[in-house]
Image (cartoon, rainbow, N blue to C red):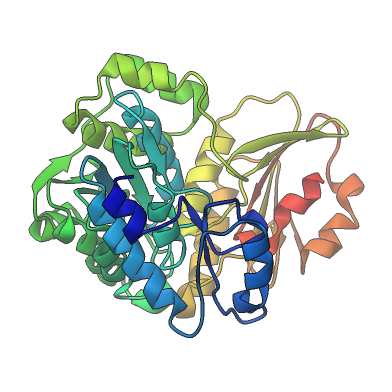
Amino acid sequence: MTEYDEMKFGFEGATFDSRLVKPGMLYVALKGENVDGNDFIPKALEAGAAKVIGGDDALAELQSLAREYRRSLKNTTVVALTGSVGKTTTKELLKSFLSTLGKTHATAGNYNNHLGLPITILNCPRDAKFLVLEMGSNHPGEIAVLCDIAEPDSGLVTNIGTAHIEFFKTREGIADEKGTLLARAREFGAVPGNCDFKDTLRSRCRGEFVVAGPLPAKLADAVNDVLPGEHNLTNASVAFALASRYGVSVEGAIRSLENFALPGSRWRKVEKNGVRFIDDTYNANPDAMKAALSTFSKLENGGRKIAVLGDMFELGEASQRLHAEVFDYASRLGLDAVIAVGEESSRCKCTKSFENLQKLQECVNEEFHKGDLVLLKASNAMKLGKITE
């Protein structure tokens, strides 16, 4: 930092979890429904926090400070992305591609909201060439708030689906919310070639509007090696379309994938008692469900292939219809069994249903046998991944 910056910010890195405080960091004490971060200020100071934000205005102070810090990153390009499905995968691909050009900092975990995004910004090294920010939204107006803080140079929309449609009412409402990012991005706005809201998003775009084409064959092969499925080729195509605008080459993108791995429960492969599980339970919505099922159905396996599908949340009045569509889709894929878990899922067409995870756990040895390949897919709150523990 410069002398001015040291005086202005006075810390290196930030967190709102007192357990993660390291010497020199900023600790933000936020009051939640169950825990009040202000109670942990003494612990944070003992751990070496250089600065503390607390009290009733802590969130507003955090967001304001993050905005100022972002503006101080004069040599860092801020790339933001949003969408109904595939945000984290696309973010990781963007991070991988852009890192071939220089130091790249990106959103970790689920830090993609009004709390996590400012923390991500404050943790960006001052010598980073790129800062990649994932933006989530489940209510109208949230992308605008995140853009106010991040002031993105470029933006990317992965797709317009039905996630959180309970609060947006229609896909057009979702497109309007996601389009806010492109309206605020100064340089580029990118969308995949198969996006059916291209015209709507084009009309909102402030900078150059980039429509991703098919990936070069060699890069497509490299993506397939680490991320199977047509939906992941789409994610990679739009990530590369934007990254290439900054100078990323095909060869560089291919090299960046050599040690690529997605974080968390995203297509995580686990073997237990001879049963191979694919844990894709980080989150779920109708579009992500269908994409995962399509990819799963094409995998080779000598034994049975079984899909275990749990409830999806925040679908509003369309919830039962959308659950039924997913299970109808699954039933046409030729799988050996489709097992439903949860209140909404159990009402759908399936091979067998369980009202909750506990009921399924009690029957795991009866339902799954050595040689089976099992897909686990549901909203994260269903905790289906516990089956692999």
